[in-house]
Amino acid sequence: MKKFSFTLLALAYLLFFGGWLAEKNRMPTAEAIHEQLYADPVQTPISKEPFTFQKDHNTYTVHPVYQYDLYGLIVSERRDNFLHRYANDDYINMKDVCVIWGENLRNRVQHHYAFKNNTSACFYEKKRQTASDKTLKRAAFSNNHLITNDRQVAQQIQAARPGDQIHIRGYLSHYAINKGPFRQTSTQRKDTGNGACETIFVTDFDILKESSRVSVWLFAAAGILLPIGVIAAFLSR
Image 1 (spheres, rainbow, N blue to C red):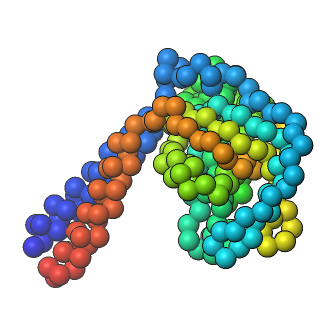
Image 2 (image 1 turned 180 degrees about the horizontal axis):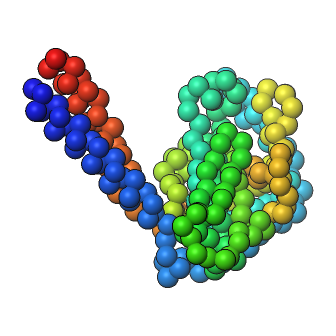
Protein backbone atom coordinates (compact mmCIF):
# COMPACT_ATOMS: atom_id res chain seq x y z
CA MET A 1 0.00 0.00 0.00
CA LYS A 2 2.86 2.39 0.83
CA LYS A 3 4.47 1.80 -2.55
CA PHE A 4 1.11 2.32 -4.26
CA SER A 5 0.46 5.60 -2.41
CA PHE A 6 4.00 6.84 -3.14
CA THR A 7 3.52 6.07 -6.84
CA LEU A 8 0.24 7.98 -6.94
CA LEU A 9 1.70 11.01 -5.17
CA ALA A 10 4.78 11.02 -7.41
CA LEU A 11 2.59 10.76 -10.51
CA ALA A 12 0.35 13.58 -9.26
CA TYR A 13 3.43 15.76 -8.73
CA LEU A 14 4.70 15.00 -12.24
CA LEU A 15 1.29 15.83 -13.71
CA PHE A 16 1.16 19.12 -11.81
CA PHE A 17 4.67 19.97 -13.02
CA GLY A 18 3.75 19.04 -16.58
CA GLY A 19 0.61 21.17 -16.32
CA TRP A 20 2.67 24.11 -15.08
CA LEU A 21 5.06 23.81 -18.04
CA ALA A 22 2.15 23.54 -20.48
CA GLU A 23 0.43 26.54 -18.88
CA LYS A 24 3.54 28.67 -19.43
CA ASN A 25 3.34 28.03 -23.18
CA ARG A 26 -0.39 28.58 -23.79
CA MET A 27 -0.08 31.94 -25.51
CA PRO A 28 -0.08 31.82 -29.32
CA THR A 29 2.83 32.90 -31.49
CA ALA A 30 2.52 35.91 -33.77
CA GLU A 31 2.02 33.61 -36.75
CA ALA A 32 -1.05 32.04 -35.09
CA ILE A 33 -2.90 35.29 -34.39
CA HIS A 34 -6.07 35.90 -36.42
CA GLU A 35 -5.92 39.07 -38.50
CA GLN A 36 -9.10 40.46 -36.89
CA LEU A 37 -7.35 40.68 -33.50
CA TYR A 38 -5.11 43.49 -34.77
CA ALA A 39 -8.13 45.80 -35.09
CA ASP A 40 -9.42 48.03 -32.29
CA PRO A 41 -12.84 47.34 -30.74
CA VAL A 42 -15.78 48.99 -32.47
CA GLN A 43 -17.95 51.03 -30.11
CA THR A 44 -21.16 52.48 -31.59
CA PRO A 45 -23.53 54.89 -29.81
CA ILE A 46 -27.08 53.55 -29.54
CA SER A 47 -30.46 54.59 -28.26
CA LYS A 48 -31.73 51.47 -26.55
CA GLU A 49 -34.14 51.39 -23.64
CA PRO A 50 -33.12 49.62 -20.41
CA PHE A 51 -34.57 46.13 -20.08
CA THR A 52 -35.17 43.71 -17.22
CA PHE A 53 -35.18 39.94 -16.79
CA GLN A 54 -35.39 37.37 -14.02
CA LYS A 55 -32.67 34.90 -13.06
CA ASP A 56 -32.18 32.87 -9.87
CA HIS A 57 -34.71 34.81 -7.76
CA ASN A 58 -33.26 38.19 -8.83
CA THR A 59 -34.53 40.91 -11.13
CA TYR A 60 -31.77 42.42 -13.27
CA THR A 61 -32.00 45.79 -15.02
CA VAL A 62 -29.58 46.34 -17.91
CA HIS A 63 -28.97 49.79 -19.37
CA PRO A 64 -27.07 49.49 -22.69
CA VAL A 65 -25.02 52.58 -23.59
CA TYR A 66 -22.94 51.44 -26.60
CA GLN A 67 -23.01 48.57 -29.05
CA TYR A 68 -19.65 46.83 -28.75
CA ASP A 69 -17.66 44.49 -30.99
CA LEU A 70 -14.34 43.16 -29.68
CA TYR A 71 -11.75 40.76 -31.11
CA GLY A 72 -9.02 39.86 -28.63
CA LEU A 73 -6.72 37.39 -26.94
CA ILE A 74 -7.58 36.26 -23.42
CA VAL A 75 -4.48 36.61 -21.23
CA SER A 76 -6.14 36.09 -17.83
CA GLU A 77 -9.54 35.25 -16.38
CA ARG A 78 -11.52 35.03 -13.17
CA ARG A 79 -14.40 32.66 -12.66
CA ASP A 80 -17.03 33.37 -10.03
CA ASN A 81 -17.20 30.52 -7.53
CA PHE A 82 -20.38 29.72 -5.60
CA LEU A 83 -19.35 31.62 -2.46
CA HIS A 84 -18.55 34.79 -4.40
CA ARG A 85 -21.84 34.63 -6.30
CA TYR A 86 -23.76 34.00 -3.10
CA ALA A 87 -22.05 36.87 -1.28
CA ASN A 88 -22.74 39.32 -4.12
CA ASP A 89 -26.11 37.82 -5.08
CA ASP A 90 -25.03 38.16 -8.72
CA TYR A 91 -25.73 35.23 -11.03
CA ILE A 92 -25.23 36.81 -14.46
CA ASN A 93 -21.56 37.85 -14.25
CA MET A 94 -20.35 34.69 -15.96
CA LYS A 95 -16.66 35.52 -15.96
CA ASP A 96 -14.11 38.32 -16.08
CA VAL A 97 -11.64 38.16 -18.95
CA CYS A 98 -8.51 40.25 -19.40
CA VAL A 99 -7.99 40.80 -23.14
CA ILE A 100 -5.34 42.36 -25.39
CA TRP A 101 -5.42 43.23 -29.09
CA GLY A 102 -3.86 45.45 -31.75
CA GLU A 103 -0.50 46.99 -30.91
CA ASN A 104 -0.03 44.76 -27.86
CA LEU A 105 -0.22 41.70 -30.12
CA ARG A 106 2.16 43.28 -32.62
CA ASN A 107 4.59 43.77 -29.73
CA ARG A 108 3.94 40.20 -28.48
CA VAL A 109 3.33 41.37 -24.93
CA GLN A 110 1.49 38.10 -24.19
CA HIS A 111 4.95 36.48 -24.01
CA HIS A 112 6.69 39.24 -22.07
CA TYR A 113 4.08 40.12 -19.42
CA ALA A 114 2.34 38.17 -16.67
CA PHE A 115 -1.37 38.86 -16.12
CA LYS A 116 -3.60 38.06 -13.17
CA ASN A 117 -7.24 38.78 -12.26
CA ASN A 118 -8.71 39.40 -8.84
CA THR A 119 -12.39 39.93 -8.03
CA SER A 120 -12.58 43.34 -9.70
CA ALA A 121 -9.52 44.08 -11.85
CA CYS A 122 -6.71 42.69 -13.99
CA PHE A 123 -3.07 43.33 -13.08
CA TYR A 124 0.03 42.95 -15.20
CA GLU A 125 3.80 43.15 -14.84
CA LYS A 126 6.73 42.51 -17.11
CA LYS A 127 8.34 39.11 -16.63
CA ARG A 128 11.76 39.32 -15.00
CA GLN A 129 13.43 37.06 -17.56
CA THR A 130 12.19 38.95 -20.62
CA ALA A 131 14.62 40.92 -22.77
CA SER A 132 11.89 42.82 -24.61
CA ASP A 133 11.84 46.62 -24.35
CA LYS A 134 8.21 46.77 -25.51
CA THR A 135 5.69 48.15 -23.03
CA LEU A 136 2.04 47.26 -22.72
CA LYS A 137 -0.30 49.81 -24.29
CA ARG A 138 -3.27 50.62 -22.07
CA ALA A 139 -5.41 51.54 -25.08
CA ALA A 140 -5.14 47.96 -26.41
CA PHE A 141 -5.95 46.21 -23.13
CA SER A 142 -9.13 45.77 -21.08
CA ASN A 143 -10.65 43.81 -18.24
CA ASN A 144 -14.20 42.80 -19.10
CA HIS A 145 -17.09 41.73 -16.88
CA LEU A 146 -19.16 39.43 -19.09
CA ILE A 147 -22.87 39.24 -18.30
CA THR A 148 -25.65 37.43 -20.17
CA ASN A 149 -29.07 35.86 -19.73
CA ASP A 150 -28.58 33.41 -22.61
CA ARG A 151 -27.65 29.87 -21.53
CA GLN A 152 -25.82 28.98 -24.75
CA VAL A 153 -23.78 32.18 -24.67
CA ALA A 154 -22.97 31.52 -21.00
CA GLN A 155 -21.67 28.06 -21.89
CA GLN A 156 -19.43 29.51 -24.59
CA ILE A 157 -18.07 32.09 -22.16
CA GLN A 158 -17.35 29.44 -19.54
CA ALA A 159 -15.57 27.26 -22.12
CA ALA A 160 -13.04 29.97 -22.98
CA ARG A 161 -9.55 29.87 -21.46
CA PRO A 162 -6.45 32.09 -21.40
CA GLY A 163 -4.68 31.82 -24.74
CA ASP A 164 -7.97 31.63 -26.66
CA GLN A 165 -8.64 34.09 -29.47
CA ILE A 166 -12.20 35.35 -29.12
CA HIS A 167 -14.89 37.55 -30.66
CA ILE A 168 -17.43 39.26 -28.39
CA ARG A 169 -20.51 41.14 -29.53
CA GLY A 170 -23.01 42.87 -27.29
CA TYR A 171 -23.52 46.10 -25.39
CA LEU A 172 -21.39 48.10 -22.98
CA SER A 173 -23.92 48.32 -20.16
CA HIS A 174 -24.65 49.45 -16.64
CA TYR A 175 -26.68 46.92 -14.68
CA ALA A 176 -28.46 46.68 -11.34
CA ILE A 177 -29.75 43.84 -9.17
CA ASN A 178 -33.22 44.14 -7.60
CA LYS A 179 -33.36 47.93 -8.12
CA GLY A 180 -30.05 48.37 -6.31
CA PRO A 181 -27.22 50.69 -7.41
CA PHE A 182 -26.00 50.27 -10.97
CA ARG A 183 -22.66 48.60 -11.65
CA GLN A 184 -21.14 51.00 -14.14
CA THR A 185 -19.18 50.22 -17.30
CA SER A 186 -16.17 52.06 -18.64
CA THR A 187 -16.67 53.49 -22.12
CA GLN A 188 -13.03 54.16 -22.99
CA ARG A 189 -9.86 52.08 -23.08
CA LYS A 190 -7.42 54.57 -21.59
CA ASP A 191 -8.86 54.96 -18.08
CA THR A 192 -7.32 53.28 -15.04
CA GLY A 193 -8.25 52.43 -11.47
CA ASN A 194 -11.69 51.80 -10.01
CA GLY A 195 -14.39 51.82 -12.70
CA ALA A 196 -11.99 51.24 -15.59
CA CYS A 197 -13.41 47.82 -16.49
CA GLU A 198 -15.86 47.23 -19.32
CA THR A 199 -19.14 45.54 -18.45
CA ILE A 200 -20.46 43.79 -21.55
CA PHE A 201 -23.96 42.36 -21.93
CA VAL A 202 -22.93 39.58 -24.32
CA THR A 203 -25.24 38.58 -27.16
CA ASP A 204 -22.66 36.55 -29.15
CA PHE A 205 -19.44 34.92 -28.02
CA ASP A 206 -17.17 32.95 -30.37
CA ILE A 207 -13.86 31.20 -29.76
CA LEU A 208 -11.98 31.75 -33.02
CA LYS A 209 -9.04 29.57 -32.01
CA GLU A 210 -8.52 27.60 -28.82
CA SER A 211 -5.27 27.45 -26.93
CA SER A 212 -3.86 24.07 -25.96
CA ARG A 213 -5.96 22.30 -23.33
CA VAL A 214 -3.07 20.02 -22.25
CA SER A 215 -2.51 21.92 -18.99
CA VAL A 216 -6.22 21.68 -18.13
CA TRP A 217 -6.18 17.90 -18.61
CA LEU A 218 -2.94 17.47 -16.65
CA PHE A 219 -4.16 19.59 -13.71
CA ALA A 220 -7.47 17.69 -13.69
CA ALA A 221 -5.71 14.30 -13.66
CA ALA A 222 -3.36 15.45 -10.90
CA GLY A 223 -6.32 16.75 -8.90
CA ILE A 224 -7.88 13.28 -9.04
CA LEU A 225 -4.73 11.34 -8.19
CA LEU A 226 -3.52 13.57 -5.35
CA PRO A 227 -6.38 12.95 -2.85
CA ILE A 228 -6.38 9.24 -3.71
CA GLY A 229 -2.65 9.10 -2.99
CA VAL A 230 -3.09 11.00 0.29
CA ILE A 231 -5.88 8.64 1.42
CA ALA A 232 -3.84 5.59 0.43
CA ALA A 233 -0.83 6.93 2.38
CA PHE A 234 -3.03 7.54 5.45
CA LEU A 235 -4.50 4.00 5.28
CA SER A 236 -1.05 2.42 4.94
CA ARG A 237 0.16 3.87 8.25
